[in-house]
Amino acid sequence: MPIRILFVCHGNICRSTMAEYVMRHLVREAGLEDAIVADSAAATTDAMGWGVHQGTRAVLRKHRIRCGGHRATPMTRADYGRYDLIVGMDEENRRDMMRILGGDPQHKVHLLLDWTDAPREIDDPWYTCDYDATYADVRRGCEALLAALRA
Image 1 (tube, rainbow, N blue to C red):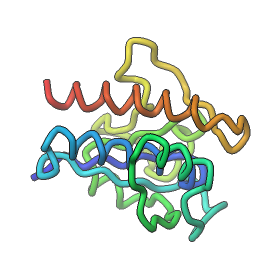
Image 2: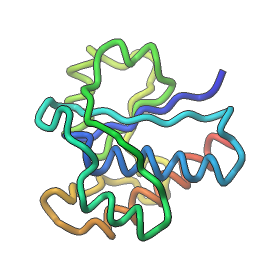
Image 3: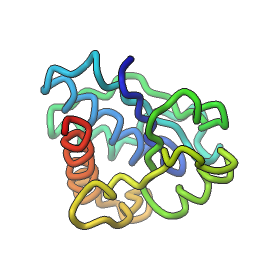
């Protein structure tokens, strides 16, 4: 069984989608497609059905990472049983995830930069408009998470 990761952010059109596709790219480069599966979801219903934000698409394209025809979908309580790790981007996401999940008895809920040597939140580019900075944080987090999973 592969390790299943669900990346979560507020609307599932910027950060979590970026993390999903960056992780898929890194996993593919490492030849681990059968061992690690990445997906993403929203902690709210604000952007349900929307596609990948144009800023996210642009920064992924710049780094030669494909992002497909993703549509924002909501995280559900049932996701706790479907995924091995549920990874948010900031403390608001963590609070929303805990509310949706009703707790975290198996310690699956984390923030993406928890695996780095400088754990902190990832700013939402919806507000900062700095998709390059978000990409750098997401990439750093995904690389650190992948290294931890491989160890």
